[in-house]
Length: 424
Image 1 (cartoon, rainbow, N blue to C red):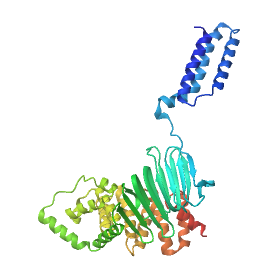
Image 2: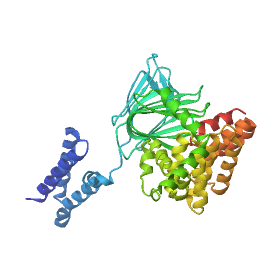
Image 3: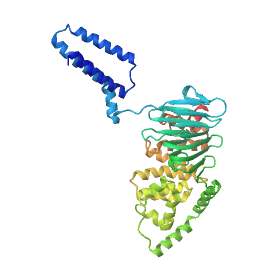
Image 4: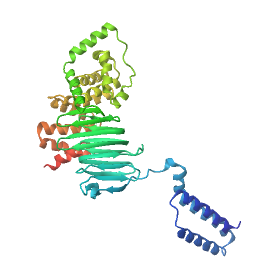
């Protein structure tokens, strides 16, 4: 085969590879390229023999270098960057500047994305798209309710900011509602997994399918119910648990006496409490402690188990038990990172008490002084801002708001900080 024929054959082969890996070229474009190559090869006939010998190789090298990134992404998928997420369709409204969602027609609004995810906003809902990228989407819900169906993809992270709360997801089907007037958040999880963070609930409250979460900031109430359960019964159960915690001394003494009489088994060891906590089985953790005796458990539980117990007790609003678990953490494991985290969580526990705000503020101040860049720094500063506003007024809280926005411009309390800053 002559050199021009070999070059044309190579080009035809590379054209087939290009057609399979990327958007195929238009036939007219391909024909123009072939004609141009033939003209170049014809002109090369008058050149010295060694130039003619090297020309096909040069053409092949240039084309190969051009296609290398595309072929690499095809044959080595790990090197391929995630395709960006974009809004594919908008029904019942339009997207304005800065991502604001404007409803048209009063029948709600629906957004569909190129990878299959979908947002459905009820009539009157106000929100905006904070970010839309290859990493996922951040939706800010100012008021109203949105139903989200997210296509599972572990490389993308989706989140909904509702007031001071953040609902984080990877792939799931759920509804979130935020009422700024009553300061109430409601999350209903139908499928998948969501983690809710913010005031009262802490940094990551994980819900399992079929669970409904309601958080009322004004009443400082957190209620989790199951589908098919009576929400009033769930609330009554939480109140009963909190009432039982008001007189722990008798229960502790009874449990300790029973433990001594029956020679209890050794410390619980590996109980997989973290898994129980993540799946919302808080009563299971509390039942284990009641069975083994509260005082005995506080002396023998591991650091991780003490933290799981404190979280379960907080979620069930058993402030005394949560406080005891966190104090045991600090006393028994003083040099661990958990001991420092316990300082912040003690502040959260104090907020559960009717007169605990001043003590909670002291705990947040202590945490920020000892760990200004710690795990809970953003949350501690945000709670400090809220408590100072309630105890001393907005003027005193405004300087904290400025500091919060400087350090955590996209934090859970950014909206509250902006409100304080604008109220000058």
